[in-house]
Length: 202
Image (cartoon, rainbow, N blue to C red; front, top):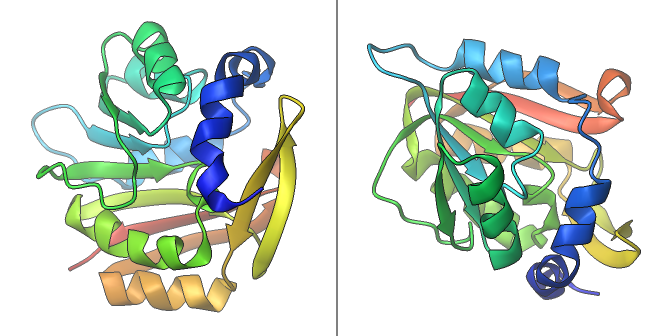
């Protein structure tokens, strides 16, 4: 199992994963922090959901909060589910690596998706985040709490994860124009996710 196998794995097991995915929204506090950090304008908040998965529960929650959500996933199985579960959202089948939508967003989310990329691809993603960030946009993503690679499991299939060292993420965020607002390694209130919340300040 390598990083390059992740998309094909989710194409194959995506529907089973979606059935098994917990929907009690343990992520709510972090999503609310992201939304409260995002800049306010006269229109709806524009949210970019990278590696959007099936849309349940996160995409649905964001849409129910009145945001304009754009869901992006490289697995067509996932974008089909997202379009069904979050019909008011814009759904795009694309790899987040090298994404170029020529559009800025008030909030960018990469929850349980960014950490499936290899280390080099993760480093390059910070330019992608910045390219899609409106002034003062919020960025929320999950990572590992220490540098390394690991093989986890989704729907009884092995799945690749990688992480950089926390200080490397801090440096990459700074270089891309983001300030870290909050970092919680292995948050016990959120299923032991390691979570970053940052704000774009070019």
